[in-house]
Length: 526
Ligand code: BGC
Image 1 (spheres, rainbow, N blue to C red):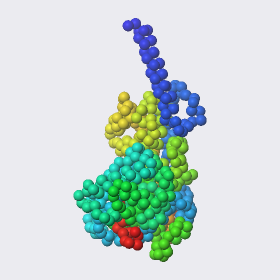
Image 2 (cartoon, rainbow, N blue to C red):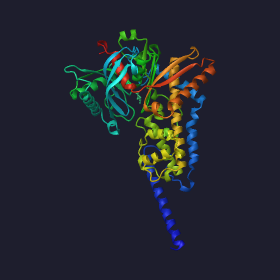
Image 3 (cartoon, helix red, strand yellow):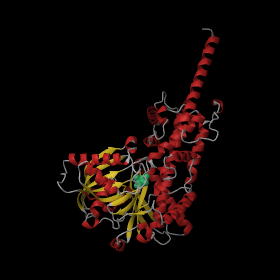
């Protein structure tokens, strides 16, 4: 074949390839940002020759995410959050919600208890045995448990369908468990951990509030009693139950650790969502926060476990990047949970997806074609970020294979592309650890005044996949908290000898819910 003809064919092929990439690129721009505007000039397509170098974009990502993690900025954010916390402790119906738990467990509670745990991605039904804190495993043991995945379809169930789904799982679990005999003619007492906001009206009751994490079950039932909804759904199913305790998952986490260790005074959740429960003096709250409460309760309670709903804090305090802003604007509840949108398992993957989308768009990452597998929102799993971050193979070969598989790429990402992904992932997770550290430090400062105390040891009970499993996350939180304490102490000439330890506790929510049933189980609570 004459050389000229060969060159012409090559040129045509090249044009075809360029057309194909450009076509995908335009198509992708339409789908990936159908809800959010990428730029004001979004209809102007950049010619491929003027694309931005990937390493240049990589530097920008790193700078934008690391800038807020400077110690002085973090101190400032912690102080601003504290002001917000104090305000909301006095008056807010959405956060800083007092529970009815005013005493911590003694660690002597015993028996078998049924606990339900509705989390962001699973619903669990368990029979838990408590046998006093001096026993092995801290005296808490799961005798039987079933775990039911919650996929996007279940998240979209309307209220009735959702509670019917829960009731079916409770029914099946109790009927199939050989350790448990369903009692005849009397209701089964059970506790519920609800990983969503709730306005508590009694130890065993609370009104449904708007739910986050993509759930819609609250629609049409906001303000209704949660315990009664579960009891009637079970009744429909032919099961008589009595909900005797309702706790937020953060309070359950605190209770589980407190069963083992009486010095615990904070619970932290960081998984699909985030939250913290703190044990504070009743007088820290405005009187209206208690609603209509029994005078006996008011007379007895000196301290109370508060569901902070800390995920809702941080707007205009925690700096956001343009990707956070896109995510927020495209969210079904914008501005609802600013801290959550930048730190949790549900969102870290989505932030990376948006960064990738921009890199595909402006730097020709993956040849300028957005991988089909991650075109839709929330299709990039945070587990992939963890895998990339802990990859120690040369050239990140191991995670490159995983990226290729999960994104369904024809060829593996290049070393430069993997280096870009690694920096992006680290930037996202390091900032998340810094923001969580700031939020925890600020909550801790509600309980401790380092200018007055000589020294203190605090244990924060922690649960959730990000805080317990994401590589290096907890360690980074510890380091940031320690730096915050010592920087503040140096400035205020106060004692720096305060240690906050984040203690992961396995199955904390389910165990703590059983503890809540045990603590509150008595005719006066029913
Ligand atoms: C919910 C909290 C919950 C937290 C952790 C947040 O989205 O609002 O109630 O405790 O997630 O599961």
